[in-house]
Length: 300
Image (cartoon, rainbow, N blue to C red; front, side, top):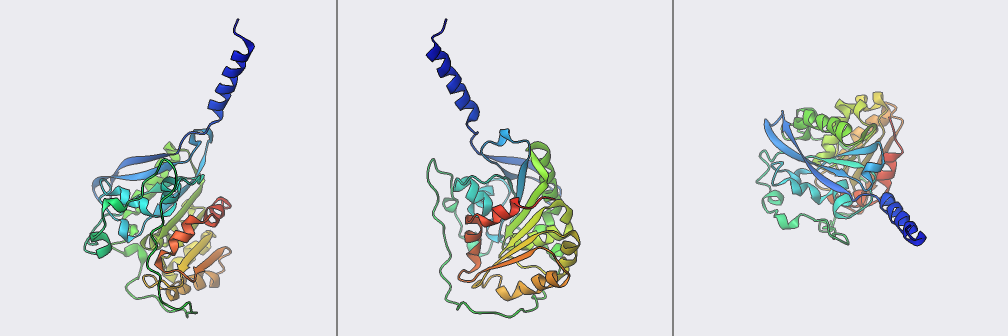
């Protein structure tokens, strides 16, 4: 007969193993892109304890212009910002499955911030600790009130932008379906967010398919008033973020759409201005907790 203390020790050890949540995982999922007629990868992040929950809320994150790439060897640039950076590189316990695809380079490779980027700037997950945030140089623009201004004519219809996220619309919807089917995604809790170019893409995708999302949060990316009716009709919760000193996506261009949402009777639009920050206001937004809590408060 085994000594009683040995039996108790085995029971305690087994209980500890069963109670310990699994480590988070970062998966590269390969898919055939109908839009690009090529095989590409995207990231899927699985949170700690993934196997212990039947359904998980899902975030689809659309990156900015500087993280474009070939969807293979350059996919790691997607780790630089947003919820995936926070969950994986900064080791935050965010209770979401996160989808993070990559836009193709197209004709953007000549931009200095893309041309001069190097793999050593990509943040990595460390055994312990976090990565320092790389803020933009502090803007010298005054923190001042601005008036609403009409959007530049070239913005036009976001769904017709030949360099925007709209070209991957079918791919993005297929990724959501894959995560729901294979990775325990909850179809009633799918959230959409993106920064800069990805913020513009968030407006476009949410307006085109509002029934697919429980909430949308465009960050430092404005949209045209023409997307408002679809969002209002679907009563899709919206939280918009802008930088008060942003020169890439100036604050005054956010107001036409936000005001149109209110004029049409949108019941749940929020607009937050980080008055002291420029285009990199996304760092404060995604590093905080409020956005993630707000997502979790909404279910279709």
